[in-house]
Image 1: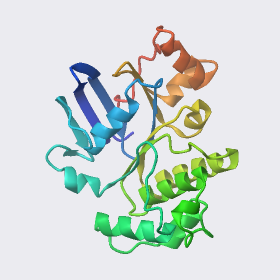
Image 2 (image 1 turned 180 degrees about the vertical axis):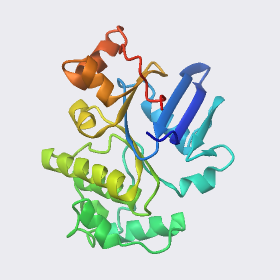
Image 3 (image 1 turned 60 degrees about the vertical axis):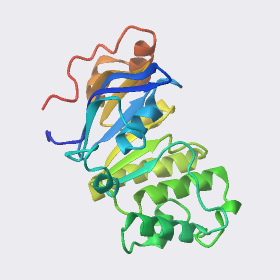
Length: 251
């Protein structure tokens, strides 16, 4: 396995109103893999994602994205990242095509195949519709399209299949696997749907009360827990720990 990391976070701390919400947090994501990021509501997943993207500044600790220190190289790094954080927002009166064109201009990404990207996310016939006409599921698909259209090296996806029906969830699963295999992307993804993470992830990180308490290869989880990821996750949530000694940092 490669020893190169797309994300390497060490000793992250973030405080709001005097309360430490991210506590000495460590994260390591290997390039060319899918990292499933799990935790209960309010555990700190979205805050960690915002720290990785530079939307928040850590009070302590360091973050390296694609081998670069994020506090020094934030603007360069952002061009290599695609993301969905919370609910995607768009220019409602503009079409899907126009929203993506504006994003490309903002990213300085030059030309890209907007129609092909919309087709990849299942919006082939919706490109000229104003976003105000889009359903929740269509908005989520457009958010994914915006995240990938500039062909980033790293995707940070916070609950990307929210609002999708079972068919849409399966289509996005296949898309994420394609992006890693054929475009050499790395994906960090959170979801409350454990079965979806189990279908696609190479490694898992679990955050509890602002600290990542376990990182493990999915293969090692399946070897140890008979019910796989669900058994592993709820074992941690019950306070017993994951019991995985071989972490993802080992070469």
